[in-house]
Amino acid sequence: MNYQKELDKLLLNLEQTGGETVPRLFLHSCCAPCSSYVLEYLRTYFDITVFYYNPNISFEEEYGKRVEEQKRLIEALNQEGVGHLIRVEEGDYDPDCFYRMAKGLEACPEGGERCFRCFDLRLRETAKRATQGGFDYFATTLTISPLKNAEKLNEIGQALASEYQILWLPSDFKKRNGYKRSIELSDIYGLYRQDYCGCAYSKAERERQKT
Image (cartoon, rainbow, N blue to C red; front, side, top):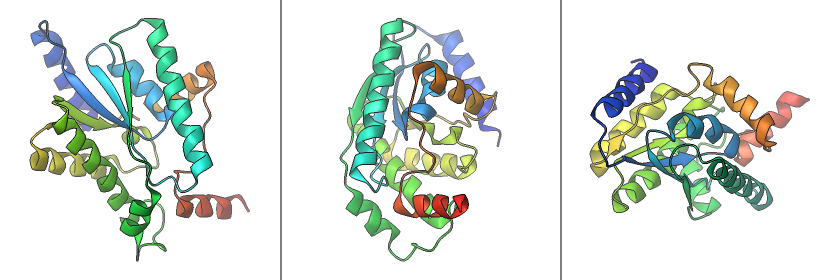
C-alpha cells in the first residue's frame, strides 16, 4: 500500500468537507528533528498534540536533551503563527518497561523484531491516550526515518486503531522529500540531531559502525 497516497486522499477529503470543527490529532514523536517536517506539513489540517513518549531512550541525560529540544521546537513553531496551535504532552519516562519488552531480544539487529515490539509499545500508549483524550486520529513521526519500516509501523497502527476504536492516520513521511526537509528544518531551528535511535542496543550498534 502507498501510505503517502492514502494520506493525500484523507487530507484532500478534509479540505473538501472541512467545517468549523478541526480534527484533533494525537501525534507520537520520537524526536524534534523527525517531528519538524511532520508538524510543518500537518499543522494547517489538524489541531495537533505532540505526545513525547520514548521509554526506549536508555540514558536519562540523552532523554532530557531530546525532550527539551522537542518542546523548544514546538514553542518556535507556535511563535510563527502558522496553522493551529501545537500542544505537547510528555509521557512517563520508564526505561524499565522497554527493557522488560526487549528481554530475550537483546541480540536482534536494528530494524528487527525488537524494534517492531518497541513500535508497538510506544504506539499502544499513544492509541490508549488518544482514545482517553477524545482525539479523532493518532499517528507517529517514526515513518519519516529511512531506517524505520513504514509498512510495519502502519500495520501496527491500524491494528491498534481497531483495538482502541480510534482512527489511525496513515503515513510515510519520508516521501515527497520529507526526510530531506526535516534535515533542512533541523538546520533552520538549530536542532540537536542524534546519530542513533535511542536505546542502548542501537547506540552500541552505531558505535560499532563508527569503528
